[in-house]
Image (cartoon, rainbow, N blue to C red):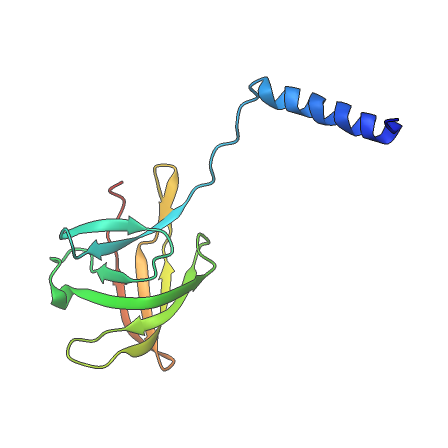
Length: 138
């Protein structure tokens, strides 16, 4: 014998399934936040979400080694918010890796998404770099 509770659950599930199949408009995807990283393999910029490794190019300068800052092992929190915070390592030219905090801010609307436009690099509690990143080219 089938219990009344099981019958009610089955009817409720079937009616919800029928409502979902009727074609209610799906919710739009949430906007994503991107940062510009230099893609060394094809010598072009790439837009990344929470990159683990990133080669940040300066805005307004050519993409040569003196105009980029290399980061790796990045871990992020507050990504997609007004200000995103990352911890990782920076690789100065000819030197050992340095523990670094990377702060991305200046989030701007780019089509239906966002892009971070300012970067601040901190090491040992002091600001080392502050610069603007490339804008929206999606």
